[in-house]
Amino acid sequence: MAGREEFHPLRLTPTHRRYNFMQRLLSSNQYRVARNMTLIAEDLHKVFATRHGSLTVLRGISLSLTRGDALAIMGPSGSGKSTLLHILGTLDRPTRGRLIVDDIDPLSLSERELADFRNTRIGFIFQDHHLLPQLTVLENVLIPTVVQQTASLNATESWARQLLERVGLSGRLDHRPAELSGGERQRVAIARALVNHPLLLLADEPTGNLDRANARVITRLLLDLNQQEQTILVAVTHSAEMAAAFPRRLEMRDGQLIEMER
Image (cartoon, rainbow, N blue to C red; front, top):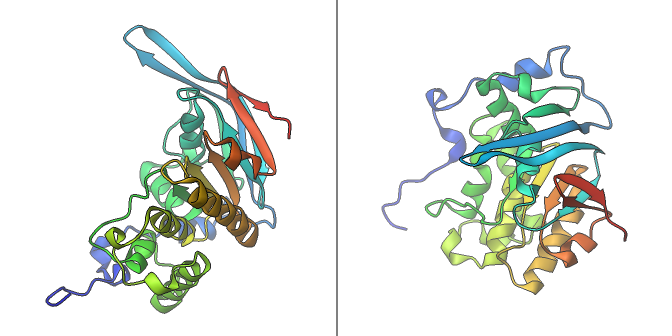
């Protein structure tokens, strides 16, 4: 568009960047890179205070996952699926219990350290894509890399372009979200979630706003990319069809996770 100032999310000045906590963490003895990085949740409880007293949502959730695992969690609305996902993604804290991500207790970090850890180690995909309407597809994918620039600008942009090619959007790099279909927007969100090479990929109803055909495409794409990138994929969904495509399925029932038969 004529007169539009060119925007590149990686060309912000240092005053707009957070300090590089991850470089310090990666070089410390606390952070050990292993071939099979793990997510461990032990005895997670979550209790909310309401006007009518305490509301217990999670009752002793324990879970262990390694790279390449893909888990679908089903359950009715209000059962605690999203609450669990938010705790696994360090967006919320359990009332009781322990969370370990690659030998690190992220909930023991300061708020600034936790934000940096979350940005580099966890990718989020929500029911709504949350793309910035004024940015192009490529710029939206690059947004998470603004905070932590641990690779060269060219290498980071090249990786973002590779991801967009893998989700079938190599011809849409300069398009804005309004010019995309719902399924295409969600594919941009998937590429954005993977751009920082996360260990965890957490999806909260990722097909909830899509028709059946697009839901199948997104489900297959998530599972394929999970295997290719060897992430830990956890998705919560109401869709029995989506859950059936996952190698492991659990149901949230009365605040606990129950293994589902295939």
